[in-house]
Image (cartoon, rainbow, N blue to C red; front, side):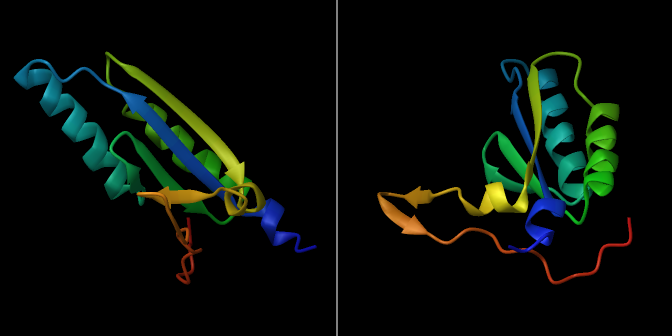
Length: 109
């Protein structure tokens, strides 16, 4: 058993934002851009995820996402361990694909 599997975290942000008007689309776009700037990657159109080296680091990014939440829409933030993330099965057109691997880059924050 690797202890890192339980210390390393993945932060998932799931959202459903209104995009009927030009202003709402702009707000949704800005929300996505801010998450990308914070190191999140798009998993699906409305699901973004980010690797965090520890629970404390995950809490920093969760707090940051909370700081730029849009006024309207539904946003869910979930934190799972690397072990739980590793148990996820991903399919594209009924073909099983490999998951994103842990980044090799050292994180300072």
